[in-house]
Length: 260
Ligand SMILES: Cc1cc2nc3c(=O)[nH]c(=O)nc-3n(C[C@H](O)[C@H](O)[C@H](O)COP(=O)(O)OP(=O)(O)OC[C@H]3O[C@@H](n4cnc5c(N)ncnc54)[C@H](O)[C@@H]3O)c2cc1C
Image (cartoon, rainbow, N blue to C red; front, side):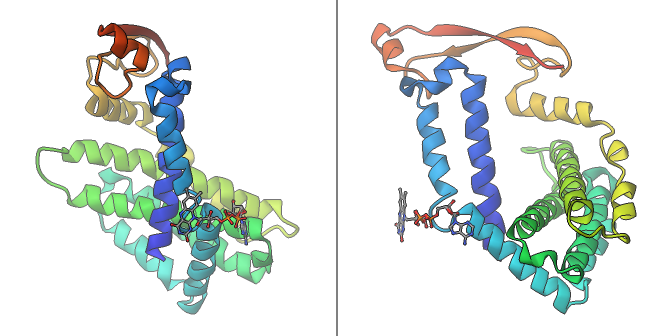
């Protein structure tokens, strides 16, 4: 089960990252000489072989639903309670609230017999996957010590992902609880209580911290600012094309960053 969650999440996120890399490089990202398009094709196949993403989603929702029903809801409630004991600065409280809501949606999905719809099961699988990845990240961020990846950096990553978790649960939960034939009267008000506004606090500051750590603060000014920066690609570096290697000279591609 955990293997399905890992495989589904890692391959889909890798595919999205490769897509972003192409977009960030503009036309150079698309042409063969720059290898990014090859990375995109190579990562795409990982969402297909060794169990497609759709098959992983079927496995995740079917098995987790069964565990939730068998344990009378304890499976996810125990995870939420463990998160609630962690420090408050790693997004754990937001993920715990999301997991409690996921639990309610799962139990009511079965009660209202919506499990016959594969689309609903896929919505559940995504909620489960994001919650379980967020849970693992919170535990790691709360426990980490040392210099290489500073605790502050990982906590900012965990807080940002906690917002992704809450957004996923809010969005998919609303579709299931209010978008199907029957309105889940007991779940709909709980979804509204998942305060995305509160969870979004410090979003921009956390994004700045992660961008600065990941890419070098001199290259990435605070989000919200418009600036120009440049990327220098030297021959032999990943991303250097044939034409560039032939001319044996570095070239600079000017890029405008518009973040607002
Ligand atoms: C480069 C490459 C290397 C490979 N290497 C190996 C290997 O080493 N060993 C090996 O055994 N196989 C290998 N495969 C085969 C690979 O495992 C299959 O391509 C994969 O399982 C998908 O099967 P399929 O191509 O028949 O697609 P299909 O099963 O026809 O699926 C097509 C689409 O329909 C979706 N779909 C299918 N069934 C359902 C369902 N019940 N519900 C919802 N959606 C569904 C799938 O998710 C997919 O999106 C390889 C494939 C490639 C392209």
